[in-house]
Amino acid sequence: MPESLKVAVNHQTIGLLAKENNEFVFNYKDSPPDGFVSLTMPVRMKGYVHPVLHPIFQMHLPEGYLLSIIKKHFSKEYMPYEIGFVTKGKKRKNVYNKIKW
Image (cartoon, rainbow, N blue to C red; front, side, top):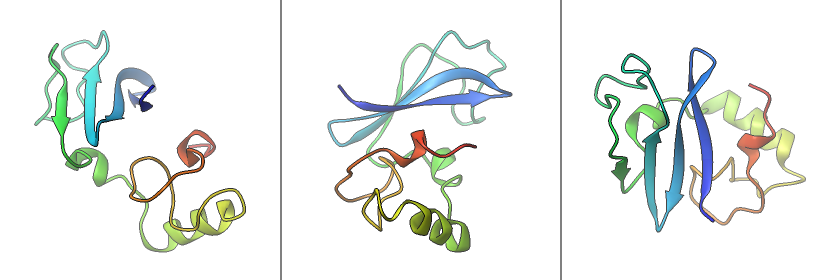
């Protein structure tokens, strides 16, 4: 089963982001036409497939100080460079399921 994350807009789940066969796939799930994640990714039935994480999701990954705090907090449970399935490396667990956003 592929790893996946629920994607929400205005506290409402609108789609699913998954990693399958070294590709990232985003599919809208019963989303209204105005419930899109990006102007470049309008609501449609066909999924959005990308060889790397879609740019709209890349820009929301933690960097710098926040990334170092996350790594420090989860270092005993996870590999030090691992923050979830959206990063490179071997994963033990999915950190994004543990973080309370």
